[in-house]
Image 1 (cartoon, rainbow, N blue to C red):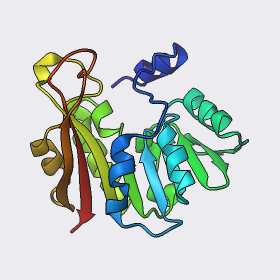
Image 2: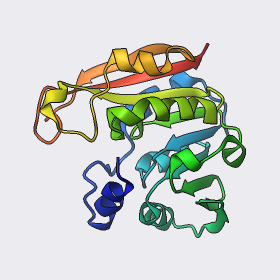
Image 3: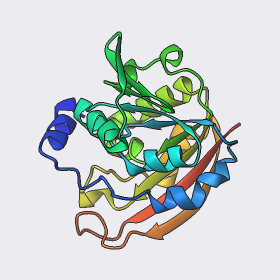
Length: 212
């Protein structure tokens, strides 16, 4: 997907995908990952999600990757903290106590730059990418995080509805991308009230991925 698509979304404030509260599936199922207090959680394509506040509020150290600098500036502003900004190759690192966000193309983020993480929370990354990019992304994420355990949120709907992003990623595709590296468990599946952009039916799913 053209990065300009997302830059224009943020510049025009067309962020209906951004929610004002932590995602209910995060609240209900994050404990299934069995993390210790202080564990470091990586959130790919994080935007300025309130999920970051929730993770911080539950004592986790948070790392994120986001294409839009504007989104990250707004995130830190809403957190009420001033980040230290450092250039690292093609990326910028915004850092404050307990939180580090890398601004730029996630495919430019390396293991060495990110550092070790204990878990991944992917609510808006896999489903934001068109089908042609999802296999590359999933492989990069597995490598980047050393197959860290993961809570993944997806949508499953008839792709002929053409409402993405967020795109439909069904169970077969989840297992195709992650089955070699992880044991894949469906934690919850429910119909999404109102669908996406008024189109139904859409199922929302939460997955636990545990390293094999």
